[in-house]
Length: 599
Image (cartoon, rainbow, N blue to C red; front, side, top):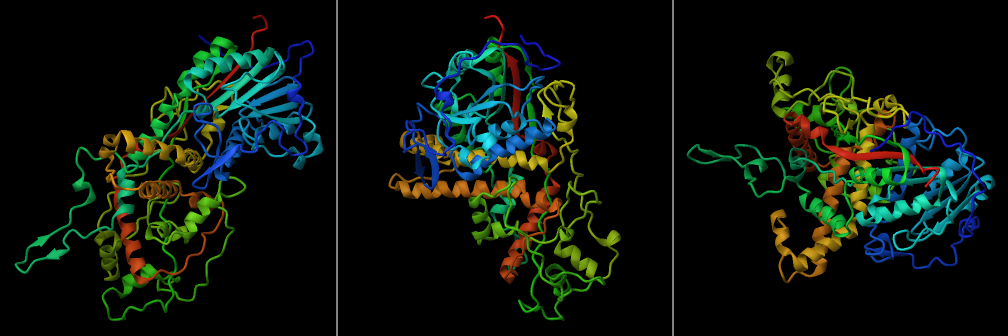
């Protein structure tokens, strides 16, 4: 069915190529092409989308800044795997004319133009979101042009045999399953005999979190014996786990997952292009190298961010009170002799960036800085040396945060090793940087990765926190489909209301659309907050030397509530199943091939 080449080369002598007039339209002045409509975008609830009908252009993602930045994130990842190259091919001689189909902002073309200084580039995309070439170096301006159109409804506006190389990346969310055959036929037409094509596509994955992670974020933990009756009997509060039944969804974001899958199903978009594309690819191209399906699991659970330093004047516990030592050891930074220190200076400040890329999504920073709830303050600041959770990202011996009962035992003078309760937390699971389709969870056999694509050692050398990059990418794509999710929800409310009941959606027939929209926005906000907590980008930044951002001292009630949440989270992590950490948050595949010399 396929052949794997040990060296991918494209250096065959060819006759002069035909070049389309449209491909020569260079947008070096940064202006739109005359045929491009000025109404290319529409804004829906603050998100920018293309103005085409979903049947003609089923791409559901928005064109907001944080979504477009993912393109640069992917480019940097590929350059790391390829040791600096932007392409998965090993060219003996660089190509002379290249097409980037679905070029997005055009960052891949700009990087490739720097790597191949004699090559001309054409970027083709549905809408005008490309970087204006007039801001680039002159050496790049004259070699780059942007062309716009819809390859689903019309043929590509290029001549036969025009390009030496075609690059395709991340277009699967825009191509219905029945359109791939026509698309590959067009690619084959515009590619010169012996020309090369490379495709990198992700499966459509909805990352979700198990209930043991999200439950402590939802409800205030309750004491098991909080009610004492006059006759001496006691009654405890049921835990959230005790109240679940068989009809309860498997996780807190099950409704969003169902809507997400329906969005692509109704657009006839296959959610597993990694399984679909090889058959089409090997039909049109030869000497194919089909990379394995690579999955990246969820990142290791990061440590909890410590509580902020408290001011002495915030509140003072009476020195004779039983909780004096406990409160002070929890609230104030400790000095060298173990006593509470009130003279420590403020924490170092840091720049306001929390993004993987060179710039930061304005939405994510606004959400994290303006949310006043205890759920958002739970994951904010302070030095990691005070964290009480188990961190698989640290080389030191795991440490545990003491509960109030344990702290009281310790403050009473007991030997901590002898008198403190034993915390039977399981050891962190073995770190697995990636999984292959044929690999087991505890093995990363790299022999099936063709060496012609990239050295397997490069993928295996990625550190633990690199997995947070893949999770961030996946959940950002889900959030970029917010308006498509809303349209799907409205359709169910109008026509298939029964499908919402298993997910706990309680809706009154008299509810206005605005009320349903508010409920939907709360679902989106909760999903975003949960994923930000799971990815914990602050941990990645702290590992490379960034200090924690400063926090204001908490009020007494806020501090007590936050401590209770932390204890609930630490308790939940002790019993977390190891298999939950191996659930893929991203899956991708790369294919490389050549157009036959004789058709």
